[in-house]
Length: 307
Image (tube, rainbow, N blue to C red; front, side, top):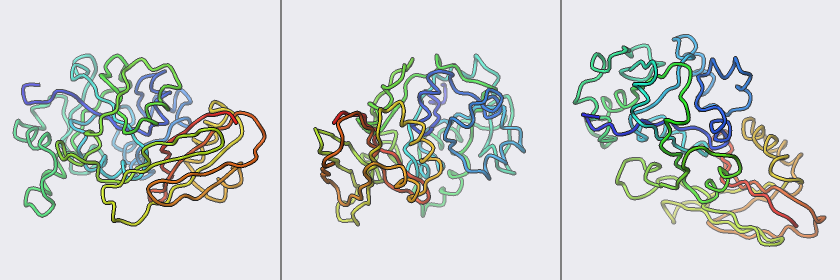
């Protein structure tokens, strides 16, 4: 706190929020022991997960000093993530390990004493955010900004200041379960650098369903760029019945599989669109609006409604 660290951060897929609300943040090892690993969408790939296991990080929950670091930059373009902001007092109430650099890196240092791995100037560099990519300071910032605070086993939800989401639909998705912490929209945490004043990736802003008509808008940092492809999946039944199906599809994206389960699949182009569902039997439905980031489906909105 003396060096300007007012909060610690962790990002995760938005579909993990209900489990976090129920259990708090659990280490990978504890998630597996409790049979919960299959119920989450992990942030890292299999390579990083193996490295975590090999280096003993499986016992810890990882927190960052800032939301503006390289892995977050990449993941917010590949997934629908949210940020959790923690009180720094979490390090006083738990067994903490501090690292210099990414905890999976061969060259990182770690110690139970923060001053033995990071000095005041390091923390100032981390909190200042990324310099220009052409700057001579870029490589040093890229390494040091990935430094972590590792909390053993579990972080209780009482340490969470707030859960931060990007869109109104994300706020609505989180309200489907009992949440013991505030959930807020704060677009600044999704900037590439604090104070930059804009989100630098496209995202679906909202999905509105009125009767049998679905409308959506997307935000794009560059209106002159190529139109973004969006997809709408409509499934029979309520949110509660479809959540596991949709979550599993997001973990293992296959367009063929999506169409197999879809009541009504639709391809949507541009910054806005309307879709008329047509003559479907009266009943309760769940709509998923999503786009693609590399090999990942990015679920922007999950809505339950009646026809």
